[in-house]
Length: 186
Image (tube, rainbow, N blue to C red; front, side, top):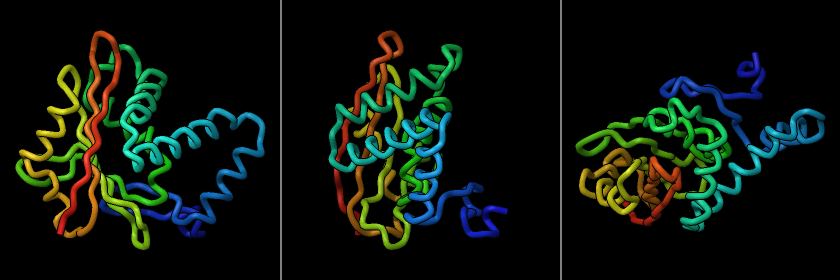
């Protein structure tokens, strides 16, 4: 019903709904911030917005800390070291990004699948992003893998700036690290 009324939009390829524009996003934020009991959701949205801004500024420390906080808070100890759980953490941590991006998990490109690709929506000035997730390796190793395996091919119909975002965490310490590099396509 919310899709038919225009409050939400549906993207068939991702089989997901999203808030279609800035005005409705603002009204959604007003509704939850003005109501008691929604404080936690409101904080999650603010944290997600801050994480996206940190990513776009290439603030690697802030991105690692932001993703680490979401990972610790939202994943069971039983599935903490699971790649699918980490992908879900990224999707949740970047929830706010859906305003400006279409998020595609396991997008085919190059020689393998890209973990998560952020494709800017029409009229967005933001760069595309390719996010690679690792554990017990290194963020630099993840960046090297993105380049070596040509993940950028997932964006072959896109031209402009692309941020390569590599996130790694240590299973023992649960500490996250991040490297962000910029490149141009087309």
